[in-house]
Length: 193
Image (tube, rainbow, N blue to C red; front, side, top):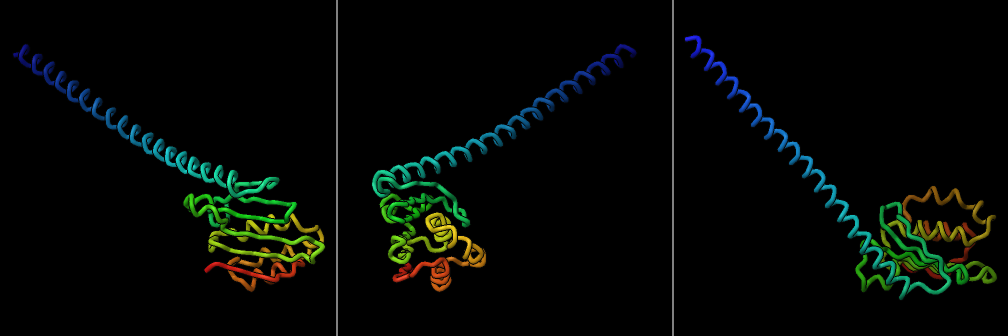
C-alpha cells in the first residue's frame, strides 16, 4: 500500500510537470506570436512610409527636370494642413511656385498648385497670384512666407502681424488686403474654384 501511494504521488507530480511544461510552451509561443505580429505591423508601416517617400521623390525629380527653371531654389516643406509641397523660388524673376507632391498624379503635376509672381520693385511691386488647385491645402501660407523673403525689411515689419490674424487664406478679399498692406499693387487675382 505504501508502494502504491508512492507510485500515485510520483505519477501525479509527473503529470503536473508535464501539463505545466506544455502550458509554458504554449504561453511562450503565444508571446512570441504577439511580438512577431507587432513587429510585422511596424515593418508594414515603415514599408508604406518608404513607398510614399519613393513616390514623392519621383514627383520631385520630374518637377526638377521638367517644370522648375534654372537658378530656382527648391525647398520641400509641409503646409499647416499636413500636405507635403515642393516650393520653387526664383528670386531673379521674383516668382514662387508651390507644387503639391502628396496628392497629385504625375500628369497633373505639370501645373503648380499655386503660382505667385512679384513684378520688379521698379514697377511698384505688382503681384500676380493664381491658385490652380491648392484650395484648402495651405499653399497660400507657404507662398506668403517665401514672398516675405523677397520683399524689403520695412515692408515685412509693417505687416508681419497681419499674417497671424488671417485664419482662412482661401478668402480672396483677405488675400488682396494682405498683399496691399505689404505694399503690393494687385492688378489681377485669379483663383480656381
